[in-house]
Image (cartoon, rainbow, N blue to C red):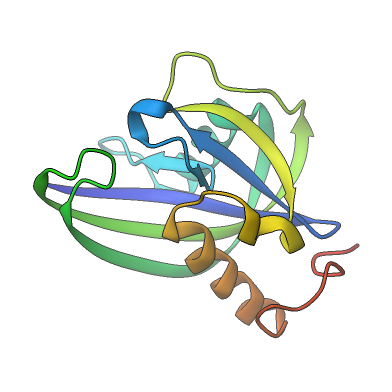
Length: 151
């Protein structure tokens, strides 16, 4: 199976916007985003998914990176699988809305998480990949302090 998805990195005042996958999907934190629907532009996907998962309206600013991963084992069940994920990652800015948790979807919580606290939470690899691309675009050294994204 192959899936193409779009995600967004929103960093503000040293915090990154994340959504938590439901227990069925491993209860780990990820970037807001999801699968591109037939005929949908990836930018529109990132905006739609961010609103669905967090309640926030976002503006896509820049393309950060395109990531490709081939999974051969389900991280939750340990079962063998053959899944190729192509992940388009954008930077973005929150422009409206109210932070809230998604109900009945693929995530069950949304939160602004301090960049300095990321090592202490269960997260998918996409968070580190997205933030590394965001840092590179910002000219910020990896692992820099809590002042990242201030302003």
